[in-house]
Length: 217
Image (cartoon, rainbow, N blue to C red; front, side, top):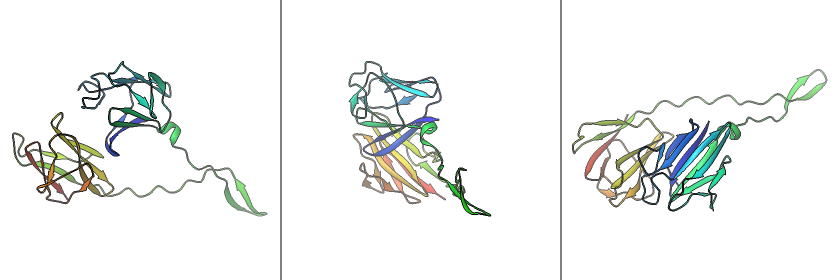
């Protein structure tokens, strides 16, 4: 199934599966892919799925839509294409075309020696890792006591337009980084920049005047 991987400054902030015939992208909250940034128009672009193909169409946005560095009005997306809107890069991944197994010949023993077979060589599936249990607990403000489970690869926290940070899962670790907004988040009292910082159980994150604690078991 095709999907869009949204990143800024090389840091992935969200992944969106393309499941509908028409998927909208823009700054307004009713879009399917919401990018809350002033460089992105309210209704910036649309992705249209026709059969197995996905077309990107710019909706007369203020700053334009680019594919692999070139301005695009309407274009068929290929697996691996990078769509640019403002400072954000959105990689198009189409599993239907990118996932294929190795069809190299396999050598089989026979009475006459070794013969080639056209059967695909499939490696055994790796064992699934044990599930991680981690959450963010709000320590102050109106939502004090609320706990958000970190079940996704990327979880964003904060107030859009004010300050936003993202917590990203990488294998068996979690990292936090600043996404956008004037107020840099702080980790245990120290400012967090655009570079991801590893989180440890009990770490305190402060963002837009709200204090949160990272809990991992």
